[in-house]
Image (cartoon, rainbow, N blue to C red; front, side, top):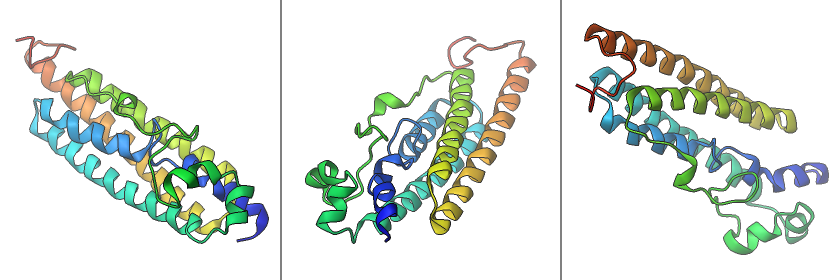
Length: 187
């Protein structure tokens, strides 16, 4: 790894979308948790599908981070500013935000309301896409960029699928003259 890349990739563990507020860990847990309160089977399936796919994205990001940091020398670790992280986690992949703040369930939402949760999911996918855009602005590694572009494209597809889910939910709620209420409670 050339010295100029060490500085970027030494921080890559925290820049990547692994455990930040818009990361893959939060997305997978958000969607897999929200499915329990979804009143329609199609939406439960949608959340299960996307939540499971996000777990695959988490594995991809973890593998990238590991590959980029596993062989750093002590000098490279210090030069890259990776030393504080290294003291706590060695080169282990630990879910943090770009700020270094550890992942927390407080960074995700599960409201139990059909409209609120699907709207949150749309926003989450857009925030993840923006984070991937920002990574691509900083990265000059073609192999990493290819993987990030793939993941970014999947966030766009997820956004589209959540949009379809929200339309389906609104249509179903309108069938019963219930509009923007939680069918689990407002009968």
